[in-house]
Amino acid sequence: MSQEKEPTNIDGMNGLERSLKRVGDVVGAMFLLIVLSPVFLYIYIRQRMSASGPVIYSQERIGKGGKPFKIYKFRTMVVDAEKDGVPQLEQEDDPRLTEFGKTLRRHHLDELPQIWNVLKGDMSFVGYRPERQFFIDKIMEKNPDYKLLYLSAPGVTSQATIENGYTDTLEKMLKRLDMDLDYLRNRSLWLDAKIILKTVFNI
Image (cartoon, rainbow, N blue to C red; front, top):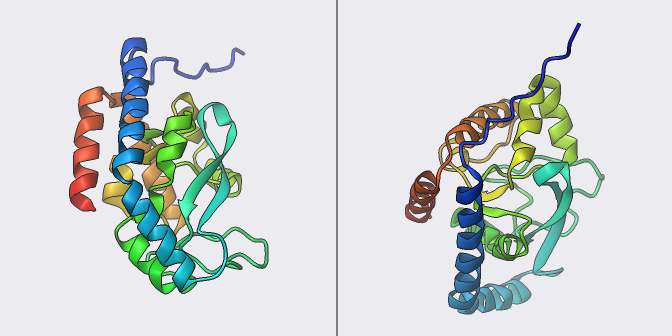
């Protein structure tokens, strides 16, 4: 009995579009790092004045090809947010948030350091949100198609992020997966541009 093969044409972009997408990511990331440098400086100063601990924190996530990488964010939670060592889902009004962290989270400014991830090639501006292996394992118990996302790079924003909000439950994660797979099948440079514009207006 022959095994069913995974689809190889699930990606809506061809090779040229993927190359242009990467060029756009690099140019856009360099531009934003320069233009937003005063914002980075302001957030750094406010963080140092309002809370103890590091301003930026990194966390291992799983990206393209199923390979782990370090994602960067401005810290919005107390230092010992997961002191018991068990990964916890973030919530929109999480009690572990610092006062300034709430402001950063409300305006999605905590995600700004991921521009560096885009420049490095770990991420793209548009793509599925990368998860920790702990939660990926739980998702794949329900829907093993999650592995199809590994065909592309994760993103800073996505249609699922805009419409599905914070994924504070497994049900929301599964709904987000369906939306991410739909994006992968139908993605194009034009669709990416529309998602970026929607994200800007959302912020």
